[in-house]
Length: 393
Image 1: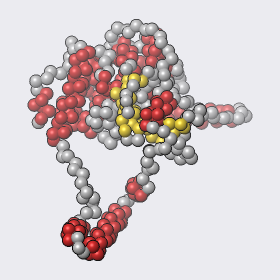
Image 2: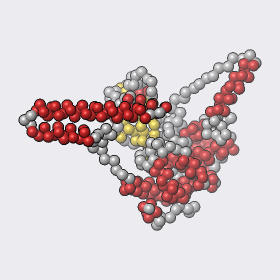
Image 3: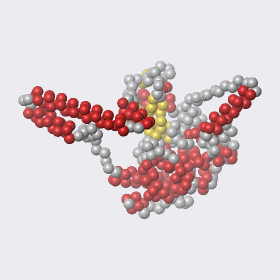
């Protein structure tokens, strides 16, 4: 096996490793996995015939068109041959679509609707913000979208990094495997292009290396720099009337899948630590062991029944908080964790995780510059739902 040959001379990380060695190990795993996949996977070759409905009949008619065109004198025969070719293509395409619809069962029919009604292009003539300012070029749209989705940091509090803790001792092979297997292999990867499917292959080849990297990253409070680079994909909110308005778009950060594995392991460590230090309120449901949306619904129904029994009127207030994750202040969060005397490993790792992040915005298919993100946590990060209630506790 190619991985075994490349990894046999590279030792696993141990308790004596440094932060630089953690960074180097993460980079080596990423580069080596990419090289192996590029060398072994079958490359997709796109050409004019990359159509499932292409058959021998169409090939024969296409040859006839070329033959008649080369004669040049008989233009009518060439036009007739082209008409026959287009007719064959339409018939084969229709026949294949009919066969595809016949094999669909149950909810699979909705998959056909996606092909019949493709989403509209993200290309826009202009974007308009709340003040009426318009953005027409890709650079102007990037600046407008960044100001909407990434809030500047307005806090500059000083804090000392706490000493190392003991949270890393809870990192086990089972915890890393749960983090890896809980994500879908179809989830979009980050800038490194390594999906969870590729990481599951790596887990089968060298699970101890992944466990060691995860454990030492948490022990050293190190989140490698290239794990903090995200691709910001702009998507539109469905069902809106005017898609020239800035507020109908939001940015989703696509992160490194290996970095997300470490994040999910840390997420498992947070609730128990936060429970012991009183960082979470009694009303917090998400990301707490033994609680789910069912508990929230049961509590609401129970209170409504109790109020009705006492002759009171019950109302429910639903609040949608704007820019919750992008506006989270790192300094306040880290200071709060330190005041509550949370484990040093978690505080140091969280501080590194939120520092020096960059987002490469993808505007109309074009990758823009990657300026640093001053505040907040990524929209799609596993850490976002647990860090927000801690920052507001």
